[in-house]
Amino acid sequence: ETANTTEMELGYKFTPHVSAKINPFFIDIHDPIVYQRNTNSYVNFGRIQSEGAEAELRADYVRYGGFVNASYATPGPNTSPGLVTESKKQFLSAPPVKIDIGTYYRSGIFEYAPSLTYLSHRAGQSSASALDPNGSLGSTDYPALVLANMNIVARNVLKDFDVHLAIH
Image (cartoon, rainbow, N blue to C red; front, side):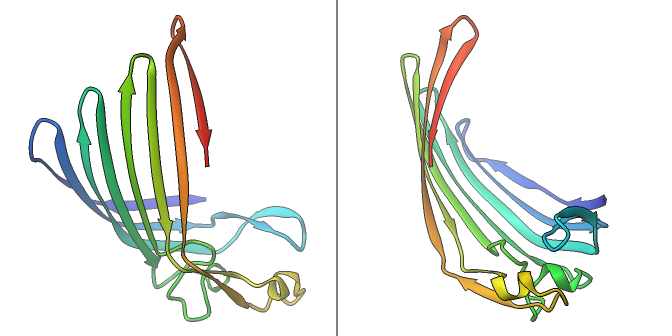
């Protein structure tokens, strides 16, 4: 596969500890590697174009901080039909909107970092079309959901050795 990416980032530092940035993008992937269930193999197939934007607001202090970031992506006009819904307005299995909110607090050797991830409504390939030997396209709707995450880090438990625990 080969990918061409065009993006521009614009950022601003409001204070030494608070910053924001926005990043519009266009990604064009020729012959992406995709899994084919009916042959249980990986092949180079089609084309994926993705266009959208990402934005982030971040606060970083010595003992605490947090962030919120959001992204929006839609298929480009030349994306192969097998990778998008019939309307070609949404990628299969990828939510068009994703929002992350997180924070951290450091105390001694420990860092506690809870976060939430919102995934908007998305479409996925239906089980009937996934099993269809003719490859007819069908999709199923999946509702929006929120994922909760907790990361705990113990720094320098042994010299230059950190321990990470992640719960999703």
